[in-house]
Length: 280
Image 1 (cartoon, one colour):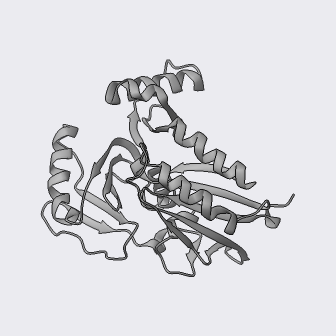
Image 2: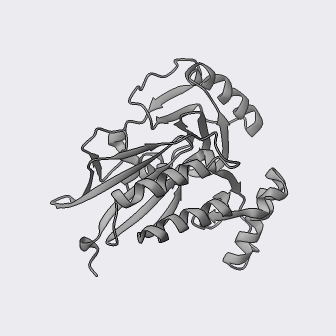
């Protein structure tokens, strides 16, 4: 069946809300354009249940039938609140994808302990002699998420970690850069150090409304821990929940705000807030 006959749905799953974004596809002279229409936001109480994600999936299960049907294909972007990240060093002696995955799990266990044995891992693309970004998420969350879509008769095309989805949508602006990439969600800062566009270090931190004042201190600490005299001082910031691009002005840091319009191939009938969700 032609993909043009399918409806497309993007779903952002966060601890306090689930956002469902019906996407309209239009073929233009510049290629395929995706436009968001009539977003549906389902709030939830993240304090209920033993796991942070249970209330969000309950809200998704209730909202999904009203936004999708059997002709819908869905892509889910998971909040960084649900993810763990690690930069996996290059190992030329690893023979295949299974050995790559085993080594990545070893890296997670070193950082997070035996809890990582229960996580489902995903590795970024393999490039010779380059470190790779790996993400980990509770396997029980993924099983429950797939069950929600199966129960609604909706095809779940992919599940994407927020950091990877955001980086891919801005790859053209970050490739070949040596800089910090700061991705803001409510209550969470995901901070990545890039070397010539490749992953060098990733940290996920809890933050509050004072993150602008704290960001230079956080960067100073992370630069110290990176133990690199040539650590870059350029910082690219994307606050995905706000169009406020005000950033600190503190030497030697050079802050640049990403605006939603930089994500290519995407537009929103509701403004720029959801642009990353439809970028490719």
